[in-house]
Image 1 (tube, rainbow, N blue to C red):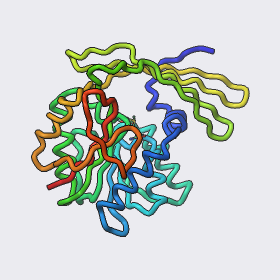
Image 2 (image 1 turned 30 degrees about the vertical axis):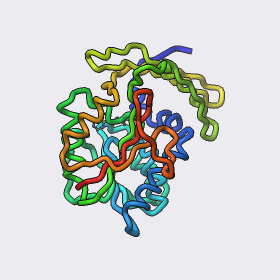
Image 3 (image 1 turned 180 degrees about the horizontal axis):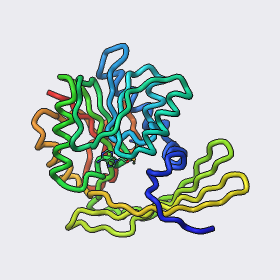
Image 4 (image 1 turned 90 degrees about the vertical axis):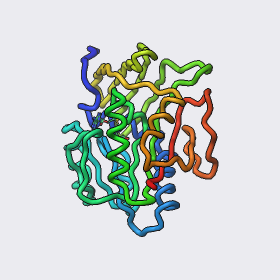
Length: 259
Ligand SMILES: C[S@@+](CC[C@H](N)C(=O)[O-])C[C@H]1O[C@@H](n2cnc3c(N)ncnc32)[C@H](O)[C@@H]1O
């Protein structure tokens, strides 16, 4: 079995199967946050960098009015076809997380699983938060979820999981191959091992994310005047139990409200 180097976001079926693994708590959290804080029948939601619509599709099914954008055309095509096949509607377009513009304001915006960390510079990250703030109605909510670097706790360098959909099996091996806290870069290698009937394939993807410690993420959020933190959570996504993030936290979920 040969390893081919690829951007795994260009392989939307495999990305979607892989990242849909174990997303029940994340999805319930997102929909319960918006049901709790936005007392509306069909809140208008936006997902920046929505990828294959792993979250958009079930949120539309739950009755939310969803929009999303991404830079990856393969992922957008996959999402549009999936919506069409299921007779669902969402407003999908191509745009960049740091420069996106909106025609109408949103009740809720969400961005989890480290997507925000794809913005590699402070300038782009702040631009993103400012655009989110502009795109939200007053009292609108932004859910932001990302890994942060714990001060003392050992960082898990390899994470593996196996997801199945029909006859397709996707084994994902995600390894941190470099951590440069000075340049604020984490280099990740993702290996996808694909099994479909008698076919076996393997793809390797290497990319960088910006690193954040807890003070660094708090500092950048505080730079955007109109967004206030109303609660914080960890990777368990338990809406009934907000937590206080500390120097050993390794995944942070912020609920931000537009003033
Ligand atoms: C980890 S995936 C998350 C996809 C989706 N939000 C989800 O939860 O499954 C990260 C996504 O960010 C997109 N992306 C990376 N940089 C971007 C940018 N500057 N603007 C828009 N999308 C971007 C990638 O194409 C990819 O689809």
